[in-house]
Figure 1 (cartoon, one colour):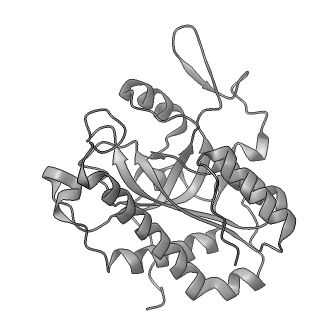
Figure 2: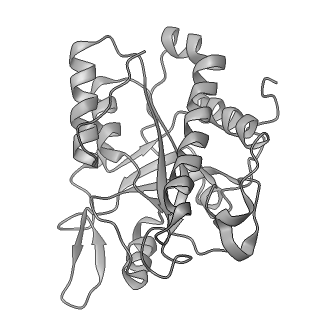
Length: 257
């Protein structure tokens, strides 16, 4: 296992780090635990909720017309990126990650302050999450709606760029993000308000993602090292899976205890 600490943050830096690891080590899988910002309003998504990156998309790859309309890709709307416009998680890897997420979620209790008036203390799992990757941090709710209408991402700060590195190297990529902030809940600032809870909320949610990836390694690590997992060339799930992403649909029926 190789763990790398970046000199500074950012999607491009993570991708460069991933490429260096692939070039210098015999990497069998890229596993990314992180935190992200909610694109779904409170009442539906809360701090501490877990998102499995079933579908990865770079939601900054678009053309915006003079009227403000957003069209995927820079030109025709049919992406020149072809198979690299979206990445889909292999169904076996989806199950491994879902089982790990369920195991960790069932043992977590969020502090009562972390979701303010909602008082949510158990993380909910987005088993079929569309993770949006961007080099922007968005606090404009109207712009978030514009991108969501096109790409349907449930959060921002996915890792589409590192997924590109993994696919080029033909190795599995798994991303789990735990929601750490929401412009819909924290007065449009994009991060929790200043004070004692800001850093603590980030640490708590990062810890949840770390536990899930460590569970994947513990239970399924041997399979990741010895088996091959191809990337689906097209979306293996129907659109309605993403519209009701918290329904596991049998994914976790036979998970290991």
